[in-house]
Every structure is written in structure tokens, then in C-alpha cells.
Image (cartoon, rainbow, N blue to C red; front, top):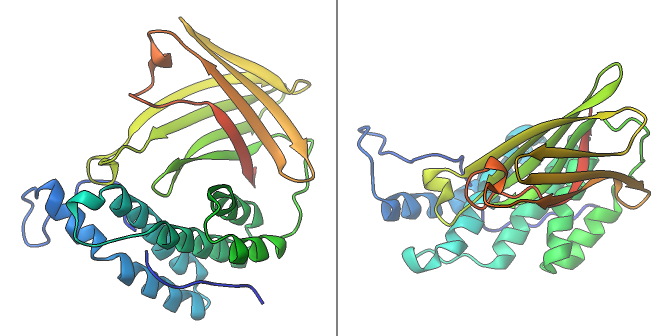
Length: 251
């Protein structure tokens, strides 16, 4: 039996406005309104999950994750208290929903957030063991992700053409007010011959190495190393491509 934890829980990025008018409200008001919905997102997600409406449950649990973490980051400005365990519960619930939707690679990515953070490890480790082991593929095309925070992921999309792979990066910096005012963003694209497993992106003083790897523990992944100077690779403030990206979808 897969273990699901229900407790606290999200929203989409963007400025919140009052329903009766289009007047902007303050950050503190928007924060309080969003944090007040955390329990509702959790309970609604569980209701959909129990009804086997997993896609609808997933949307609620993603709201749970985003707003739980956001409210915890802004704890000094809201009366609603959120803990790390509440965030871990949301991650676990998202993983369960992806598993039910037959998307085990996405489920694995969410479970691994808890294991790396060492929060709620017992239930998450149990659920992780229920997933099929990753199967590395010689076809490198697909979607690779690295967590950006607040329920959002940096993306590397790899598309296979006749002679090469087209690689597109979309990165985010989820700042302390980003659920209300939006994230900083950055993009680049490059190519790699089909016979290779390493490539670089260059632009002025920016150099980004991409190394494709595979193993039976993680499946396919990309190790990205960013070297930049004053240009910051042209990305938004604090957006970096650095890190390990796990393959979560095949193309």
C-alpha cells in the first residue's frame, strides 16, 4: 500500500487581485490570502485523489507545495504558520499523484526533494521504492528538470533532429516574493551532434558545459556547469543553469 500523508498545502505565479475589483492589493494582503488557502488546497487535493481524479489532485497539491514553501519563507509577514513538514507532505502528495498518472520519473523527482532535505523520509522512501527503477535510454531526447523552488522547476528540453539534438534551457529564480510578483527568468539554446554526449553554450563571457550521463539509479541526467563573468549569461538576477537535471519525460 502506498503511503499518502494529508495535512497542509498552492497557487500559480502572478499578482493576486481582489475578486470584486481589479485594483492591486498589497503584498501582505496577497500573502495572507494565499496562505489562508493552504489547508483548502490540501483537503481538495485529497478529495480528488480519493476519487481517482489524479490530474485535478495534482493541480491542488502543486498549489499546496508552492504556497506552503512561500508562506514559510515569509513567516514574519503572515500569521499563518507553515513548517518544513507541511512542505514535505505536499511534495509527497505530488509524487503520489504522478505515480498514479503513470509518470514515475516525475514522481521520483518530487520524492527525491524530501530525501535530500531529510524531511519526512520514512513515508517518502517507502513510496519511492514502489516506483519502477529508471531505465537509461540511448535516446537522449526528453525533458530534464532541476528544482527551482516554490513548486517550480528549471527545464532543459532536448529534441532530436536528423543529425543533432536541439537543447533549450528555461531557468527561474524564485525569490522571496516571486509567487506574488513573478520570478526572474533566463534562457539559452544550443545543439549537440547525435554521436556525442557533451556540448557547450557560449556567448560573450558566458560558458556553460552540458554533460549527459546515465545510470540505473537515476536514469538519464545532465550535469550542467556554468562559467560566467559580468554578463551573467544574460539571465535574470540570480538565475543559474548550474546543477544536475533529471530526465522526467521522454519525447
